[in-house]
Length: 319
Image (cartoon, rainbow, N blue to C red; front, top):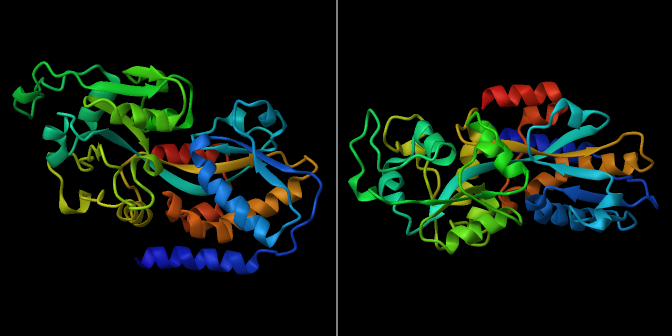
């Protein structure tokens, strides 16, 4: 709680220091990129335009013709040095990923109470593992004999499967299961429609953002973060999205897949000043909306550190 207070104080100081003299410009800010971030981006746009009504900002859905004119890009995965080249990149939020199953899935009879160890998760999601097989520490799971869970993953390269895979030391191509088109929310819909369904996803699609609880028909596969074969009290963190976000914000190395949401733009473009002012507003006042949409606040270190290939490598090592 003390850490959270320090973080909120930092945001307040940034907001006070933020220049209210945003430059009016005819150069429209056109945003595209990772789609699961659009709802909070839309909120930020609305609030920012309330303060600066002459600034033109809109989202152009990735993959559409209007996105060709985009000049501000949303990213939510580890960027390569090539992807950083020529861009100014700043973090605006942090998000987490979790494994999730249909609430009728038989895997929950095993992992729902004791949690899933890291090595078990790797086998399930990346190695076509039969969950009925025993390992060196567990007795055979007889109730799962012959049971075949159905894994759903993204067909296209995307931030969520890239980040989930990278956290466990794999590439997106290593994920097993049925590949679906569409975006991340379609993975959730597939699991809801299949009692044997399993996938991974972001908190804002797993939880109902109104009730703050896991969506009806879904259950999180809880992570045995210390791999001791049981869920300790400090690992029972999934009751509400706010409980989980608090855990992420107050735990130095949370032990679950997480990543920054960043915004990138080219400094030499004509409206770079307007973009910079919008991003600075997000990193100050806009942080107050992060929790509402399922994101963690930026840490004090995030606010003080410019995102580049070196910082990305550091984050990867911490994971």
